[in-house]
Length: 534
Image 1 (cartoon, one colour):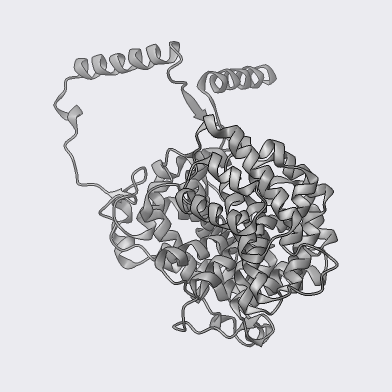
Image 2 (image 1 turned 180 degrees about the horizontal axis):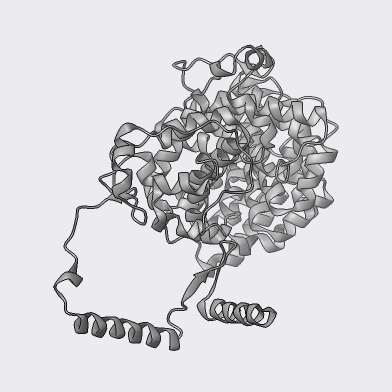
């Protein structure tokens, strides 16, 4: 059905005629995301006519058709400009039950209208800067929190809750003011945590420990989608929460960490959904203060006091498996891999038990050193390969992770990676001359295997493996040939240096790098000062 006919029938005001026309239009355009610019004015007029029909009042099935059409049309940013008004947003808010005066959600029959209205608001807020400004004026975030409260403990309203959470995520993503309001004024952290707990139907065995069945029933698709929206909204609310200032904050984050542990040990309806759920859980865990992450391995204080050796490492193993899966994907490392690497690095640095477990999994005692550290299929090989990745952020966090597992000791890191792979990290840290990082670790000793001790004298420190003996090309050269080749090499380096293609560097006494000319000049000055004093 063409737009002229649809517009004509909507303008009649007859609800049955409006519903029939829009049903046909929606069926034809449900998957439409790009629009013909020649029909732009007609689509704007159709939007205005739909808002007028909704304002005048229509029956439920007609409301659903109107809202579905509006959702399709709101994908076009240009169409939204004239219809994005305070009055029109208030119409949608009313239909989405975003009225603080309402005490309940009302009849179940009206729920599809609420869902469609929330979908329209999501599209309009995302595509219209004017709507984003109006959302602050209309205090939309507070109304959404009120709707979440009405959905509390009701398992039959997942669609409403899902799009409520999505709209909250968009508002907190697009406006720092809304993020601050949700975090402080609206108590967003406890509210969203309770919502996530309700979605998952969590039962508590004791403080910070949920009833988790490793091979229990998988989460349903609606519950998984809703949980993902809650995790995304929580991520925005917990940004910059690296430090905890009170016992109540600490309790709140520990409670949240216990829920995230439950999520990591649960499964979604498919492998892709499970990975998406775990990815959002990892992102959120990156915002949790590191002092609260011990809940991942010690759900109760009783366990921690009883025996630290009995720490439950199932969650850490899930994170390691997730990390390896992301490495194996071979793409989008910055978005997909760096969050879990950062999380595991922070856990390893702050919690000795976690570091020891991860090191045993990632850097087990060396036995076979006949291959380069970056060659192979083990997790260690994969991480060492990332140390020379073209993306600076990826190679830095991969190197940092391995460095922390080695207790920030240069000699220990070189044993597992070779000097060539670790040079970038050591140069950035000023540790090219050796030593250790700034962080303090326990003094437990690392033990080498007999195989490694035997091979150690023959290991090439640059490549990190034992190389097959190769003939020395200099043995068959005369002294004149050696001198000629040496001068040829010097001239090549000189040319590259003069053309600024390379810059010869040296290592200062403090382990940092400096241009060779500067070091030679400093050395001459030091010699002159020494001779003057003599």
